[in-house]
Image (tube, rainbow, N blue to C red; front, side, top):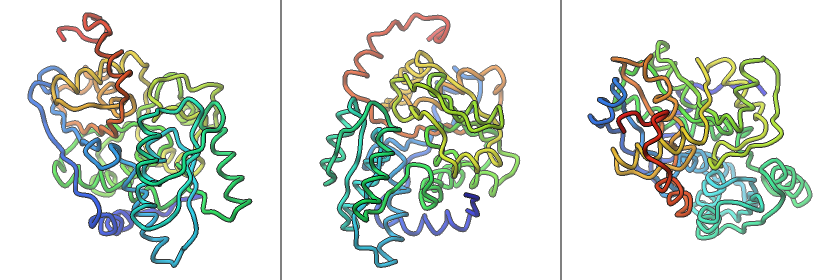
Length: 331
């Protein structure tokens, strides 16, 4: 499934979502600059109504479906943020929504989906089981299946955050962006390389869920047997073909961070920016910390993709040792 998305598509998506959401902040913090040895510009997608970037794609899709006269229902599989996006966008445009989630889904995200009017169905131990269930239901009941990655309308929608980032700070050297399903990273690549081909876009996966990393490095389509990370936004067992195709051609590099590095980044964001990031939302900063010796003097964009951390997760992160010199140094 080859892509033909351009900057024009992102600009059109920006017009579609503008009536529903405002641009999120892009901010610099001198204390983080000092700590990292470079100039960091953080894009705070946790400030959106769903607490994560994916709502941009959901609104872009539903706006187009409405314009096409679609009157059916939407069904999606999700670990949380994609489901919230489809639920909220469906509510805005009057579409009934069902979201299929893993049996041990983040209950804060489940309640949020229900608050946006969706019916939430628990099925299977991981995201892959949910996808199969959702696809079969859509086929059997003539509902519209909204894939978390193989849905072309999502990429220009979520790409609008990269547009906002570069409107605020166009002279970036590098952008770090989390990679779960890959829509956000795909949109970031398309926008950044259209605005300035010299900008280096670096994707960030979990060492415990690195199917896209493996696929990029080997040139094959790789699956993993597990996705054992607290960062459910990164917990995908296999790539989506559509976004993988974009990333193979557009992404400059991809790295992995482990759960301890993610927890450290969550603490850094809380301490220095007074913002809550979920695991996936902290991945970009974790990767920048990992690469800080190579970033000296550079201007770096950080995508804080979401802030839907549970109270229990936050408690565990804050109770963890802050003296681990492997990550913290003087912090």
